[in-house]
Amino acid sequence: MDLAYAPEEEEFRARLREWLAKALPDLPARPDPLDWPGRRGYDLGWQRRLYDAGYGTVHWDASPTRRLIFLEETERAGAPYVGANFVGLLHAGPTIAAEGTDQQRARWLPPVVRGDEVWCQGFSEPEAGSDLAALRTRAVRDGDDYVVTGQKIWTSHAEIADWCELLVRTDPEAPRHRGISWLAMPMDAPGITVRPLRTLVGPAEFAEVFLDEVRVPVANRVGAEHDGWRVTMVTLSFERGTAFVGEVVACRRTLGLLARAARANGRWDDPVLRRRLGRLNAEFMALWRLIQRNVGAARDVGGAPDAGGSVFKLRYSQVRQELYDAAAEVLGPCGALDADQQWTADRLSSLSYTIAAGTSQIQRDIVAERILGLPKGR
Image (tube, rainbow, N blue to C red; front, side, top):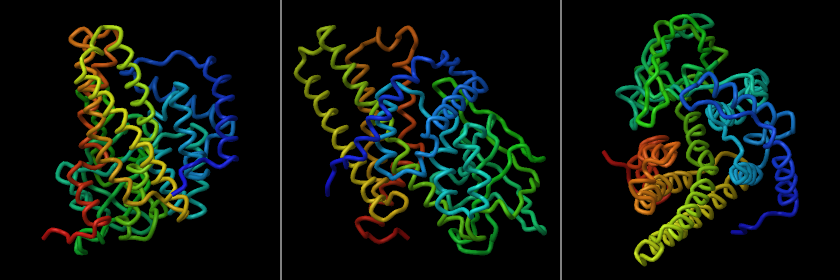
């Protein structure tokens, strides 16, 4: 497989670098991590700048390779990440672009790319997390509406969202994977209660969402009725295939910082530690090549990333944790209590990656069944 970039792609990279060099110095100060309304405004303001510069639709209107370059360059330049808008830009938006009608794309995509609206993800439930197909939130058809009742948990950014990509069971008698539908639910609809959940790191970026006979128009269904599981696989392929690209670049930069810190504090003299950091460097280089492979495969078929995204997600989750274990060894107790506590926050956050966006156990099942062709368990 050819992993080199075409000349026009390198031209895109050069233009983007030039624009970032001009745009980033004018950014306002970042808000407090606990101030989610402030972070919403900051993140949407950055998205508006991207839109005005012609980069607003890069996550679904550009080739997979250009998306990869965009994420690589913005992370290297220290630009804001998608933040509060990550569900809209990286999950719901690409799904609607791939599966929605012309009317749905016209309604929901422009406000996301302009930085006008935020989406949250209403997939997991208290008894349907890794086993997502066990979801029990019901949607009963009533004329031109679905009447939705149930509970969601770990709903990303629900307290500041305008819309929710919502999975519901529309046919309780159908086999588990066949009675599900994918809805776009307005978060200001009557009957919605949001209770923020504070994480180990501090910010309340997740919430419980309780739905009490919430009316959602049938026109807000993306894909056919009862075909939501297939649509969801499109969403998850984006989540596991390309959504972590910027974080790999960030981890490679973090590894470089650790190497410099080890040279400065004498830890570099330990050959075991040097080998450990060298192996991590090799791991992240391999992950970057895997990203290029996955993006190339998506480009070749003109669609979403394939099951190779699960291979990436599985290994990246583990290597990220190993990176911050190494950081604790290099920096010691003083580093763990750094002034802005960023190292501490990043290390604690790394613990969630083997669970978030599909547990490592689920990724192993996907790799076994869809790539290796092994039989499904009974």
